[in-house]
Length: 395
Ligand SMILES: *Cc1c(COP(=O)(O)O)cnc(C)c1O
Image 1 (tube, rainbow, N blue to C red):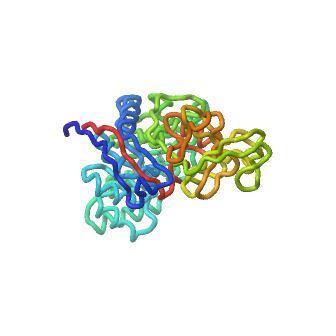
Image 2 (cartoon, helix red, strand yellow):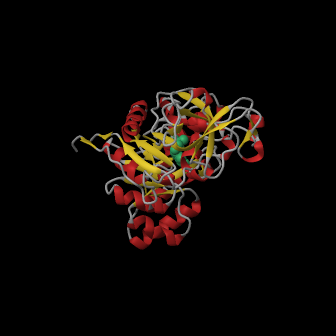
Image 3 (cartoon, rainbow, N blue to C red):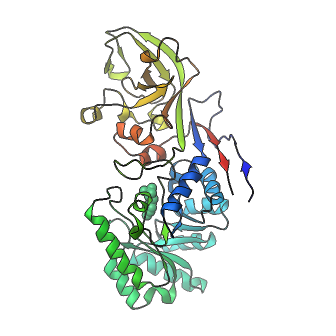
C-alpha cells in the first residue's frame, strides 16, 4: 500500500452538520497509528493486536480498523459477535477474536459464517463449539480463555490443564490462541500480576505450539514476561494512559470540543446553573456551550452541586483562549457553563469552541474529575457530535 493523505472529513451516520452541531469530535489517525507502533515496539517479539470492542471504544470501527490495518495490525478483538461481523466487512483478511464467547448453540453459525474466532470462556462454550465443528465436519479455529485470577471470564486453570493432559481440546477443535487477562496490570506492583503470569506460564507449556496472549495496554508495560506471543492493547491506542500514576509517551488521539453559544456577564452575588450551586464571588464572564451529559460529558464532572465534589474537590476544566477554564456549576443535559473571566474581555466569543479533552486537557484528567476512567468517557460519547477524522494513513 502506498502513502496517501486522508485528511478526510466525514460525517458518521448520525454525525451532525458542522453548522448545526453543538460539539465536534476529532480523531487523529496519525496519532492512533503512532500509538500502535509504539505499543508494538514495546511488545518485543510478540505481535500486537488491536482491541476494537464497543465500536473501537466509541471512536468508530470504520475509522479505527483501516488505520490499524494500514499500520500493520492483523489481529482484532471485539466483545460481541455483531461487532466482529462489522469488523469483518472492513478487514476481510484479519483474524477477529470475539471475547464474549458463545452465548448459545444457535450463535455458533454466525461465527463460522463471518470467520470469527470465538474466545471459549466456559466448558459449556467448549462443548458448543465442539458440537458445531461436528456439524460442519471440520475443526474450526477458536481461542481458549483461562482464568488466572480475574474471576470474570475464562475456564479455571486446573480444568484447562486437565483438558491439555487428555489432549481433549486439540482432538476436536483447532485452538489457535490460549489467553488470559490481568486484573491489576495498571498497578505494576500488585502481587496478583506475578501470580497470574506464573499461572499462565504453566498453561502455555501445556499447549505447545499454540500462541499465548495475556497483556492489555497496561500489561505491555509490565515487561517481557507479560508479552507472550500476542499483546492486546485497547485504551492506549486511543490515547488513554495505561498505568496509574505513571505518564507513558502515548499521543492523544481524540479531541472533543464544545461550541460556545452565548457569553454572559453575571454579577458577584448571583449564582449559575441548576441548584444555584455555583455561587459567584466576583463578576463573572460565563461561556455557555452546547454540550452536556447527553453527549457523554459527565454530570459528575460539574464544578459544584454534585456529590462527587465532596470526594474530589476539583471539577472538570476546559481549555479556551490559551488557558484552563473551570466548569461552572452543574453540567446539564445539553449545555455546560465555563468561567472564562480570566481569559480577558472578548477573548471567547460565540462560535468559538472550548476543548473538553484533547491535547491541552488530558483525557485521563477529564475522566478523573468526573470520578471515572478514560474508557468510560470515550465509550459514552453520544451521537450528536460532528465527527472529523484527520491525519495521514501510512501503509
Ligand atoms: C478490553 C480488553 C483488553 C484491552 O484492554 P485495555 O486496558 O483497553 O488495553 C484486552 N483484553 C481483554 C480480554 C479485554 O477485555
